[in-house]
Length: 151
Image 1 (spheres, rainbow, N blue to C red):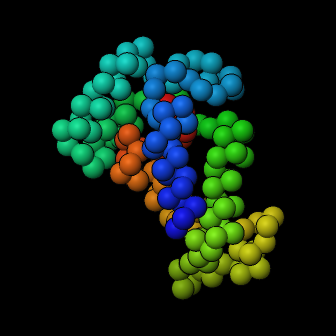
Image 2 (image 1 turned 180 degrees about the vertical axis):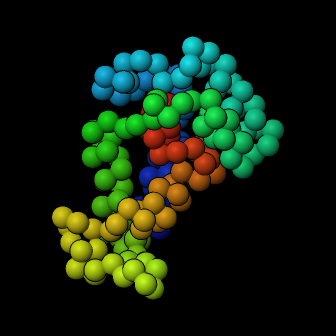
């Protein structure tokens, strides 16, 4: 939908946004004061770019996920509120997130429509996170939301 495309385009086209992968940490929490990439971060990025250019698809993202350890993944509260939650809210308001669920596990429509509860994480993952992070306009399609937001 429009909100998703707008968010993905902003991430992909603005090098100062959190969607551009760099070796400079951009958040202010304690873990983020440490470099997010291993000491050879620039070399990792160069190799990820080379792989992405040569192989396309998720090659760069797969390489980064293999090289950047999980304890380096995360988003700040500000990024949660101003990026992630704002995106989910905009998509909900635009009707771009549907109350989908397995037949044997219905999700209460009142919870789904509630401004305080909203969609569940299965719905958010399949209808927001996965489509945004696999956008081929991103430098590394297929990278996690966390690495997309904080290289």
